[in-house]
Structures are given as C-alpha cells and as structure tokens.
Amino acid sequence: MRLPRTVIALGLVSFFTDLSSEMIYPLLPVFLVGVLGAGALSLGVIEGVAESTAALLKVFSGIWSDRLNRRKPIILAGYSISGLARPLIGLAQIWPFVLFLRFADRVGKGLRSSPRDALIADVTDPAVRGRAYGLHRAMDHAGAVVGPLVAAGLLAISGVTLRHVFLFAAIPAVVVVAIILLGVKEPKATVREHRDTGLVRGWRDLGTSFKRLLIALVVFTLGNSTDAFLLLRLSEQGIEARLVAVLWSLHHVVKMLATYFGGQLSDRVGRRGMVIAGWIVYAAVYVAFALVESRTELVVIFLAYGLYFGLTEPAEKAWVVELVPVNLRGTAFGYYNGSIGLAALPASFIFGLLWHQFGVVAAFLTGAGLAAVASVLLLFVPQSPNHDG
Image 1 (cartoon, one colour):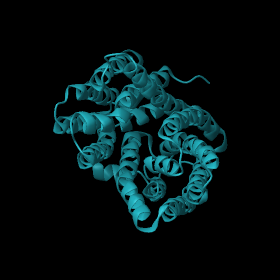
Image 2: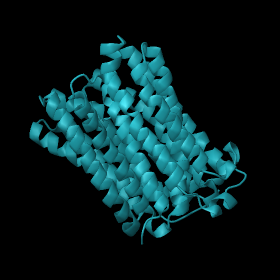
Image 3: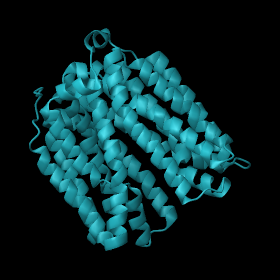
C-alpha cells in the first residue's frame, strides 16, 4: 500500500526543516561565546526558555487543531515562524536578540508538532500507520545528517562566516513553506469530525489507556538525558573531538535507517513490544556506558544506540493514535509531545547532578533503571484501541 502524498510532503518538510536547523544549532554555542561574547549561563537561559516554550505550546496547538477542525493552517504558521526566525540569528549583535529568535523558533516548533503528527494519522490507512511515522522520522533524521555537512562545506569557502551560514539557512526554510502550500492536503473528513474539544474535556475523554502510556513515557523521559552526556563520556575515554563529530553524524544515519524500517516492523508485530524492546536497548546502552572502558566497544555501543530510536519513535506515535478517539488526535499528540518535552527539562539536570555528586556509573545506571521501570509500566497499557474514560 502506497503512503499518501501528504505524508511524503510532510517528510520532505521535516527533511528541509532539520537541514536548516542543523546548519545553525551546532554552531550556535560557538557564535554566542566567540562572536557575541556570551557565556554558559546565557546559553543555558536561551535553551531553557526555548525548549520550555516549545513543550508547552505542543499541548495547546494540538487542542487548537481539534477545536478549529483544521491542521494545515497551524502547521504552516509554525514552520513559517521558525523559518523566518532562525536565519535572522546571523544579524544578531547581542545575545538577548538570539534569545528572542530562539524563542520565536521554538514557538514555531510548538505550534506545528502536534497538528502535524495528527494530520499524518488523519490521512494514513491504519495498516501502514507505523510506516508513515517511520518515514517521517527517517526524513527528519536525514536532515540532521545533511545540515551540519552543508554548514561545514559553506565554512570551507573562503570569506564565509558563521553569520553567512545562518543567513543561508533561509533557503531550505523557503522550500519548506512552498512544499506545505503545494503538497500538504487536509482531508475533508477531518474537518467534519474534529469538533468541540477543550483542555479539561479533552484530557478526560482521552481515556485511561492513553494516560497509562503517558505515565510510562514520562518515567522513561526522566531518565532520558541529553545525548551530550554520551558524547562527553566518549570524549572522557580519549576519543578525540574530530572523531566524536564523525560518530555524531553516523549516529544520525543509524537513526534514519532504524526509524524507517522500525515503523514498518511495528505495523506487523505491534506497538507495545516494539517500544519495550527499544527501552530495553536504551537501558542496555546506558549500563554499557556506565561499565565499559574500551573505546572501541563504546563506539560500537554508541552507534547501536541509534536502534533505540527506530524501535520507539514510529511505534509510540502510531500507538497514541490507536488509543484515543479520532476527534482527539490533535489533543492526544499535544499531551504526548508536551509531556515528553517538559519531562526532558529536569532529566538532564538530574543526570548531571548525579554525575557530579556520585560519578558517571551512578548517573548512567539511574537512566537505565528508569527505562526498566517504564518498560514494566507499559505492560499495563493495552495493545489494542481502548477509549475508556
């Protein structure tokens, strides 16, 4: 069965968006510190405000898309805001202006994420739903592979500065808007079905099965710290910065392939088993990073870490769709994306604090333990649709 044109278009949208974003994001700390004279505290404030904004807006944008009976206008607004804000970082003279632009960028991400995930479900046959989310995530990761390479290629050109790279990021952003306008179609059935949802009523009507899934996801996310700690561990074991950068790019290649094929596999074997398998892989990687000292083994384990994303990302989203009423898909993805985003905020702080106070072994084993607890909680979430209250 072929995937709908809208799913392909949204995959391309994510590819070009991540290409644009990853041209900028890896260079942002260097730009803030080396060009604008900001420090680590400024960077922390900027990223903390940006990610908190995105997490909260993901909740409300999903609910709005259900109440308005439309997805595409909100999706278009979200991508347009981000596409306009990101390249303007190249014009910044002071770090508070970067804070404002990162805030605007994350406003755009918060607006688009939940309606986009819901629209993929709206236009896709249930038999290939995992495949659709797998393709979308694969295209997203592909953009993350290409973006830094494009930035590196531009910086290799004589006379091209960081500011120029940021401004060049406007080109894929324009492509994104064109694809949405021309290639993304919203089915009339969606407009007819999505009515009368609100914050309180929407949460009540999502059902206990979805809420159990959400609890398990939050527990897991509290142990799912930033991947920067994995990179730090590699660096501490003597792997030089150049190789770490190469490994980061290869990691995204593994994620891209794993999410594409993982989505298709989840259509055949079911969602719960896939997510549990992914969380077991995650726990095993964290245990290994706590105990293994060999650099070669750590490199192999780090690349294998990309399999976790393929096992979980498409299956989680397809599972969300199957546990909630059709008229609350946007609301469900709002709570799904928002809960994960908000839980991720303290996760890295907790991990860093454990590393500082008790050492690297305690930090990684705690992350693995939370993944194991979350896997047990998933056993109480039904595999099949269940719209109970």
